[in-house]
Length: 427
Image (cartoon, rainbow, N blue to C red; front, side, top):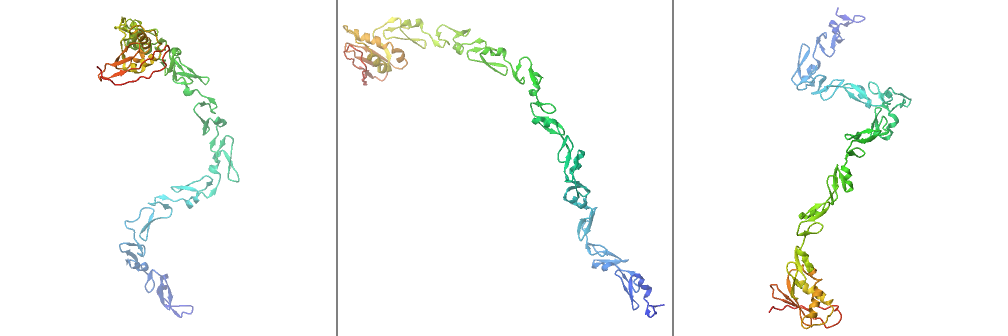
């Protein structure tokens, strides 16, 4: 005992180094983790890396370190499920991913041809397999076609699309609608399974019904869609129909524009009867807007705003009274009108005093009176002796007078005579 070797010339090691070492010259050289003369005593790995104590051949690591030999930095707070701590950082264990390591990983990352969802690959069109690693026809041609060698679907009749998943519509909806899952959705105005029939607009609702693809309107309604209200008697041709009501022309009234109307409703000075104004006393004209004069000014004057403006040789409220040859005329008549009238007078035989001048005055100023009466100031025009001098004397407040022109003694009318004016004080 105590010797070994083929010739028993070598000293033996105790207990054969307990199977945990090598015997050299009767001495045991122990494996890592064992010690003692016979390598029978276990030791702590790496002597706990200097970060722990060895007790019963196990390392009790100091705070902040972990691992069998206390060589790893611990993770503060520890790591969650599906995580492990690696040198101070929590990392997902194989097969898990995500911020909290709560998502299962997919095999081979779906090979870049799909989307990973909770550990399963949803492959893109044209790929299949657990890891989307196989090329194929999209969706297996949806059961409505055949996948050829070039991985392209040949669809059956009535189906289309890259994966033969779209059901065809009859006649392609005749370009009047769009096809979805075999059903035509028609554009407005078209109906039918293939959108080939013209529809009644809005189904003629609510004022009619659709018969033979056209609207048959209820009483009182018209239009292609029965949306226009009819007017009574179509406004009798005297107005426009708008939303069922007549908008009559000015000379017509009533619900159906059948009643003749008077202009401006007779201006409030008469009664309308069958389109004609019957004026109240003192008013006239087609619309009773003109004030009439008493006795129509006896034919010797002009009626303006209900008052008579008499010709020069007449006076009184009805111009029925003869007056002296002198008459009252406005200033502008003396300057513009009387001068023009005198230029058109024929020379008449002179009598003693005012014969020729009076005739000239009466004949010439009478046509001018209506034109001149609209101006403001009154003057006195007086025919004088055979020199036929016209004096226009003002009756205003500025104490001025207008001196007229001289008519020559000729037997023919005077073509034109300039009217000289000068401001003279009244005497």
